[in-house]
Length: 405
Image (tube, rainbow, N blue to C red; front, side):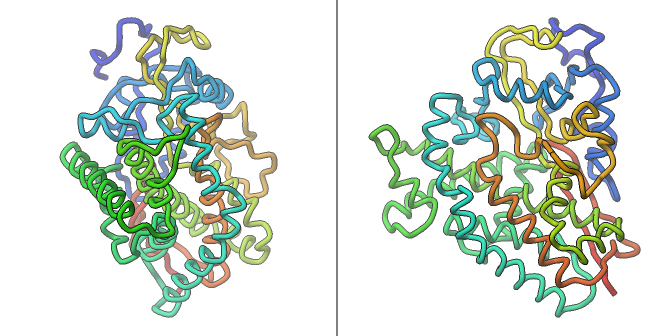
């Protein structure tokens, strides 16, 4: 362990050799299960210090209990969201909006954007979401008895919905997904290049929408007002980048992990196929079992938090995949029970910053599973292949080859 990365105020007994990036099961692994691998976080103290638990190798306090994570995520005065995770890759400090804003500014921008992703708005979008799923799955079913489900379904399905929302063309889908993969899973060379490419793209899109408005999110943003003024270029960029990046990876990964689970658990697969009314409840359990993101906060002051001497500037990790395996919160947390009730999972975060796109994401997952199970017969992971999983800031899965021959 590289203990030189541990600040002086952290007691040695609170340091643990754990990382969402480098622990066993986190690096790209054939047939891996990074979500199950993080369950070991509950074997030790409820709060510990990891010397390397961010994409840039910084240390964080790791909050393992779901209840303690809720305390952190609710207390925006003590634990700030503003850490410029995206722009820092470029050596800049502007926030993604509203994710990296604290109250009261956070509330101003969240109120502006919430109607675009409200349950009511999602209901309006639902027929288009379902049509997209059906079209893709019917094409897959017509072309053979196996497919690379991430490339042929999960990404084209979820990303095309977000591209339509942003007013962007489907034909560039592979390009955009490539940018997101380099940003979220790339090395120190690929990440800054991807970040700069995305920023340039969003800035150019904003410029074009000012000149030629259309009915899309970017036009709404460049024409919007907050507190009686138009948004600055930096604010427009902060919103555009967040929506663009958030829509390109997380929901597709969730669907991929769900289908990989069902491919390995044929009884559960058959249950959902024969009783599709169970899918909505099952989707909540799969969100609990396979959430994709780690949330990071920055301490704004010195605080003794549940016995941890957290100091101003320390990073604090609230990893959704750790909270969702908390034995104090869930009975048999490492057992996937598709009939689990009262499922207070943390997949979409908690508190004022709870995921703005959660309503759309949830419907995409449910519709994706409904239409896949209705159209594809009993499927398994193709013999001789192995899905590749990885941990990190966003957990991922690829090379998921499903077979129903």
